[in-house]
Image 1: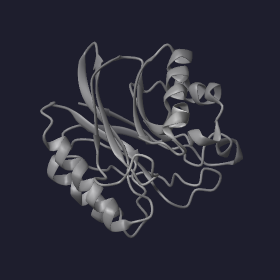
Image 2: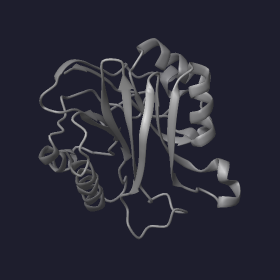
Image 3: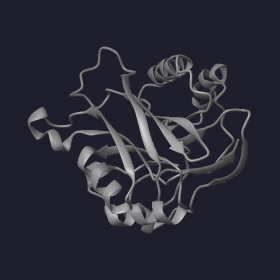
Image 4: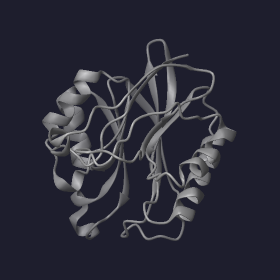
Length: 226
C-alpha cells in the first residue's frame, strides 16, 4: 500500500491506523509523514517502522516538524537505506526529495520495498528523479523489489515517468484517480511491481469528504502473488 497522509495538517492517526488495520497490508509506504507520526502510528498498530527525513519545513531547531517518508509493516523490517534524488537542493527546501528502502521479511519470504515522493512542479526534474530512483533500484540485488509512492504524475508526464522504471522490471498495473481525495480527478499515487508477479487486485477507495478529513490523497493497495 502507498499513502500520502499530509502530515503537516496533523491528521487523526487513529483513523489512519484504522484504515491500515482494515486492509491488512504487508507493508505501507507513507509520504509527507513526520518521524513522531510514523512512530505513534506503528505503536498503535503494534507494527515496525523506518523513517527518512525529506526536508525541514521550518528550521532544524523544530526537528520534530521535519517531513519525510516512512515504511510501516506488521512484519520485521531490516536493511534501511536512504538516498537523495534531488542533488544540489537544500534539505531546508520542500523541493528536496529522497528515496527510502527497507526489506520486509514475512515467514514465507521477503521483498525490498522502496518509497519515494517525486517533484511536483517541474516535469523535467520529476523524470530525472525517476531515473535516479531506477538507478538506485538497479544497484539493489534483492530478488523481489517493489516501488511505491506519490509520483506527482499528471497525465502529460505519467508515460515518461513509467518508462524510466521498465529497465528495472517495475511496471504499473493500472489504478484509479487518487487526488484530491474528496473528488479525485488525477492519479498521483502508484505501486509498481515486477512483471513476474501476478496482480490479484488494485484497490483505491471512492473519494468523499470523510477521506478528505484524513488527507488530500487516497491510499492505493496492490495485492499480488509471486
